[in-house]
Image (cartoon, rainbow, N blue to C red; front, top):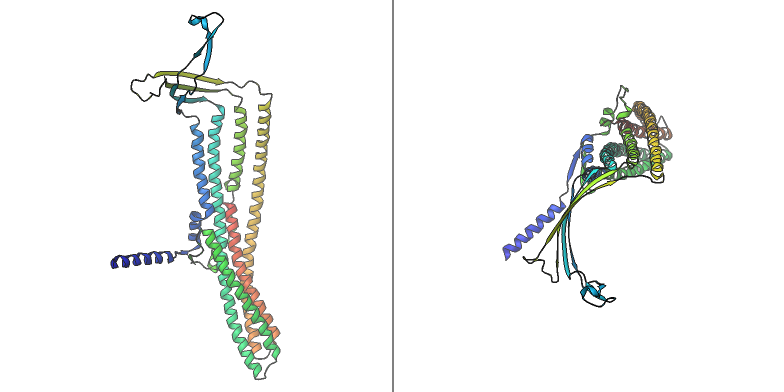
Amino acid sequence: MKRKLILLVLVLFNIGMAQETKKSYNFTLKEAIAHALENNYAAINSSRDIEAAKKKKWETTTIGLPQINSNINYQNNLVIQKSVVPAEFFGGNPGEFQEVEFGVKHNMVANASLSQLLFDGSYLVGLQSAKVYLQISQNAKEKTDLEIREIVINAYGNVLLARESVKVLESNKKSLEKTLFETEETFKNGLIEEENVEQLQITFSQIKSMLSNAQKREIIALKMLKLVLGIDMDEEVILKDNLDQLASENIVLNSNFDFTVTNTIDYKIGLNNEEASRLLLKLEKSKALPSLSATANFGYNSFSNTFSFLERDQNWFNFSNISVGLNIPIFSSLGRTARTQQAKIAYEQAKTQLKETEQKLLLEFEKSKTDYEYSVEQYAVAKENLRLAERIENKQQIKFKEGISSSFEFTEAQRQLYAAQQDHLQAMIEVISKKATLDKISNQK
């Protein structure tokens, strides 16, 4: 009994430890994208849409394949229906009628039927439509993957941005805290005015507030990344890349980007829409064609005044027949013509929409390309401005400590430095984001 109790405790302990164990993920940006394409919730469902489209295609195909059905029908005539016949048939008086029961109390029928569609224009169009439906699902999956890729890049970059902001603000806080302490000591010795201390205290309070906000934004940004990656919020995610590295990798000096509008996923989806409208028009036209089908039936029936159908000596009577049906549409009061004209208008609209999509994509590419090139220029400017701001702040700090410049001049140099630091970080994330948008439009993976 004691051994069983110890064993039970060990099992429960191991279960508890297993539940407490959390998964840990280590991702470069490329690895994060690959993980998201497999585990993102939208990616999973878009893959399921493709599988559903394949099943739909097969469902449509089976309409033109042989269909076999069978049924068994048992009937119990609780009260057999009566009819009357002239009584003179049974030796009665003329003008009188005799009640007669036609039928038996029990009867059973078992039969099987084989049907085959021989020709139907709408079925042929349906097969083509099923293929287009599958293409639509596949293109939708590709579009989803491109969107997920862009979202992951932005989410990954936002986490790095938040972390870099925290590092910069912590460094600024530490440096300012030291300067504030030295200034307070100098004030206590009566060598400077109290205003110098108060000016630094204002800046120090602002830095602490900004740092607190940046730390909270880092937590939110990481949770957003986990959501995009399809990872539970309580699991650990470690990012291998850094912001400066990603920004450098996304800078393309030669801006002659290859762009072919017909290769873009939005254009392919527009083609799907045009083809679907064409097939709808073809379907309406096919409804004016005749349809031909054939059916073969075979079965047995049996009759009895007692339920004896399971007995070996019960008599069963077989039957069989073959039928061919030809349906010929003749006149629909111009209803089919009206539906065909509507489908033709929808087809023309789809062609116009495809042309509009083509022009929009060309314009969107030019805009995205311009935005990206501008972000690269701004990154270079921000990098140089940060270098200058660091030099100015360093000189003002030396002058302030030596009593050459005022606290106002020093804090202004600090604010300029802090703004340059944030502009530099933002410029890096803009390069990454704009490049991701350009890649999505260009269908680059």
